[in-house]
Amino acid sequence: MNIIGRVVRDAQVRTTPQDKQVVNFTLAVNDNYRNKQGERIEQTAYFDCAYWLSTGVAKHLTKGSLVELSGRVSARAWIGQDGEPVAGLNFHTSQIKFYGAGTKPTTRQDSSQPENNKVVTPEITDDLPF
Image 1 (tube, one colour):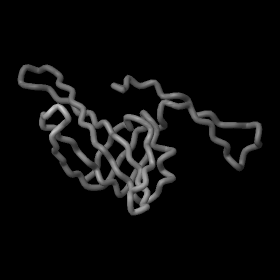
Image 2 (image 1 turned 60 degrees about the vertical axis):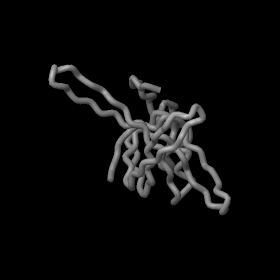
Image 3 (image 1 turned 120 degrees about the vertical axis):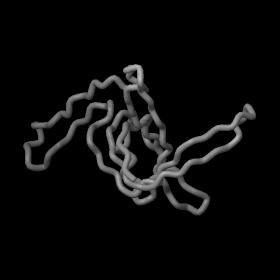
Image 4 (image 1 turned 90 degrees about the vertical axis):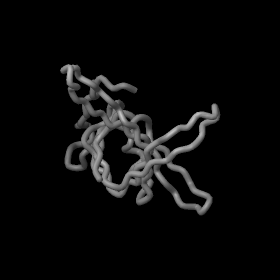
């Protein structure tokens, strides 16, 4: 399964009790459609994602980054602290494709360019819900 969305907050690297490292992040996937009355309905689904293959990818998974994930989805349910039932979606990520930078402007240095000639990636100005 593939999903495309934006990273909600910067990714975190966690270590399991078995000393394995995992990158955890949340992805917001937007969907919209028109109902029978012609009104536009917008919905956002949030996926709690886990990536086990490389922790180095965490520095690129910043808030607002547009990514496409391949993997499998699973649902979970539990009783919240208030006693009410709660449900969530997990996405077990096997591949990540980056489409855009996050909200932080970045500076890249190309090794073929002189040191004083830096390339600056402009800041993305989207209307993000987070």
